[in-house]
Length: 174
Ligand code: S3P
Image (tube, rainbow, N blue to C red; front, side, top):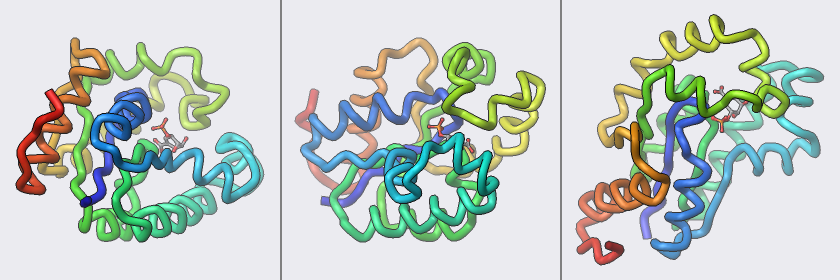
């Protein structure tokens, strides 16, 4: 089966939705942030702190390349994956769905997770700036689901419908 990749800003719900989809679609779950931590042998916050964001992005691309080459996976990516053009190229062989939400909702969802999300440490103003900078990248993903007011299950069901429409199969996942 073709791989399915979820993108979107921090707090978009990529990990929980990917988890549900791995069960309903029977695809192997890959959480890219977790792969990065395993690969680097340290937490994402430690990679940022000790080696910097540039190194983090290099590991991210390497882990993405490896995960995609496995095929038949459903993958939750980190919110910055679209900022590296090579990643967008790698992802083109999969079905990519962006999870959309407005910045107020995203800020609310990520509150209190600064310990594991180093890019939140600059404060709310910086996060708003980052979102504004990246917005065009998320908007450029042709398949998107507006997650506002939906449960993770409802989002998963919409993603699933988009996925089946792309791979040309009937969606019997409900
Ligand atoms: C990042 C998002 C994080 C993680 C890293 C960088 C980003 O993932 O990859 O902290 O650049 O937006 P989540 O989107 O899962 O929080």
